[in-house]
Amino acid sequence: MSERVAPSFLRSVITYDDVILRSLSVYFVLCFSFLFYPLSTADTTTTHIFLYIKSGLCPDNLFFHAVTCQLVKLELEALNFVVNFATVEVEGGAAKEGTWEGLRRKYWHGREEYYLPGERTLSHLIFLVNQHLI
Amino acid sequence: MIPAFIITTVLVPPPFFLPIYWLTFPHPTYRAMTTMTAGDHQAFLAACGTGDLEKVKVFLAAGLPAYHQEEEGGTSLLMHAAKGAHLEVVQALLEAGAPWMALDRQGKCAGEYAMASEVEDAERKQSVIDTLVNHAVMAEMILGTMQNQAAEAVRKEQQQESAQYLGGNVRYEKDRLVDETEEGVMMEWEAPLMEAHASLLCGEAKNRDVMNVGFGMGIIDEAIQRHGCRSHTILEAHPTVLEKMEAEGWTQKAGVTVERGRWQETLPRLVAAGKKYDALFFDTYAEHYRDMQAFHEWLPKLLRLGGMYSFFNGK
Image (cartoon, rainbow over all chains, first blue to last red; front, side, top):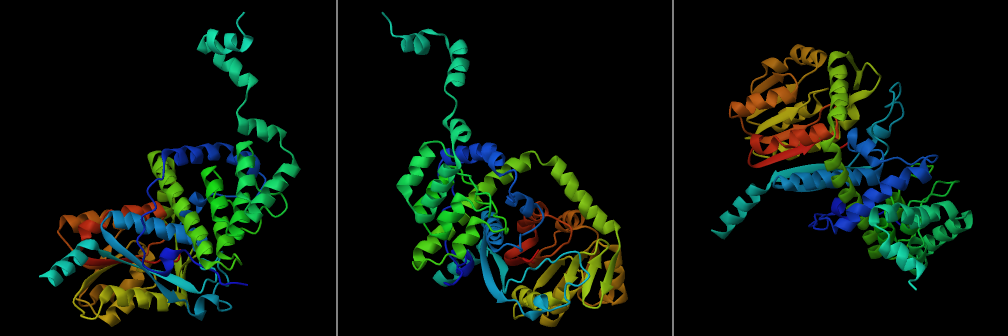
């Protein structure tokens, strides 16, 4: 069994430049697909991430969580922030027996890594660069 | 003699001609949906699983829907392509409208299939994962914008949930804070994570003005106090939590300011008073992603140059 791989941006700081809508046709295809989507999947367990995003950052599904992290990253970058996620190991407490006893549901689902968001206003970096150049 | 098809396509005026055309020649997707067989679906799934791009294109061109999921395990075409790390097939399916967020009967999405793929070519595997993430983000941005435009009902529902929490009881148990619906609001296991957040927010120099939104059990506030800062502002809205803060002396602590009330009401007041901070932390309860977005809009007004922002990324 090979190793599970996380999306690139969670593993390292990368420049993300692929979010610009590739073409309007993709948008229309996307909208079109949603018209037909319920027809084939009404009796399966499909759901839409929108329902998850409404209620948080989807920690129960690593991939959905990655998508919400990327959304936050892009939104904050639009506000001139430099966004990084530092990987922090989650220690035993969350997985310990009895931790969740009596509670209606878990809000942490056994993942061993926590992606700690650290955002810094871009202007500071510009300031540092300017200082360095001077 | 004029051929019959010229009479129907050229000589019949459009308003009469179009409905007749639609009845005679339904859309290929609709036509395929009414005529396809289980065998077609099976062959389509197999083509995705083996990465046979040409076959996949043929099926798509024939109008077979890109959103198909098989009945037994609920796996989708996209999941089969993602599992085999077939990048071109994944791209073709996404462009044909395959839903990236579909789940199989075990609750797994195509992205998880890609992450767990046993393919040896790590680069290709990574490309598939990133393609799925990029597509998902793009879709969510479009849908988020669309939803924001018609979100009044959703916003009211979210506000109601927040009001229910703030108007309801919470209780402190040994190592957790629980609301009246038996949901965990905050728990002690988060302490090492909060320590890491506090370390990032406070830095080494102990000269920052730090704000935390949402006291809860006060885990991060204790960590901020340990790390040291110039000033420490805490926003909290729940009456029971505020009582605990008072009982524990937070309202009397030197360098600590407790702001009572929801951040939605408190922040405009602080901004109007010209308050600025070096570090902000956001960890509220019974709020939604849209609330967090609304909070983010305040960041440029609240943070100084080089200010640091972080939030609890676990709920």
